[in-house]
Image 1 (cartoon, rainbow, N blue to C red):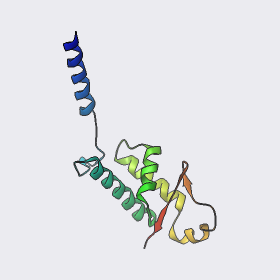
Image 2 (tube, rainbow, N blue to C red; image 1 turned 120 degrees about the vertical axis):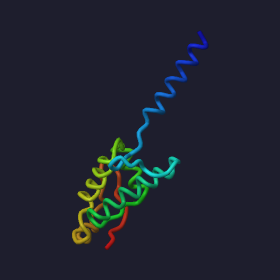
Image 3 (tube, helix red, strand yellow; image 1 turned 180 degrees about the vertical axis):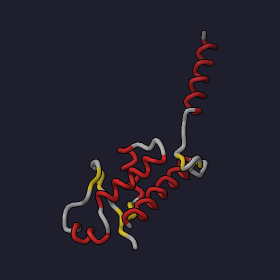
Length: 117
């Protein structure tokens, strides 16, 4: 009985690990072997998408908070996070007019970062 329990536990553990999926871009797995490296790559990807989309670079903490809210199942959700950030912060030309108001938020997360050229 105990032996069967260990076998089942080992199979469940193997299936759980085998079911893990990395975030992918056209079939290319996110680089890095550690969780920290993969997290850094995901943060950099969202920052690059927002930089290109609206010339805004959110902080790493902002991105991590948003990813907790959005969840990250695949590459398209990173694009969705970046698009939502750009929708909230606007463009550099509209940002100066908005600075006088309260901080911009997205799903309860304060969007921190800076506009770039």
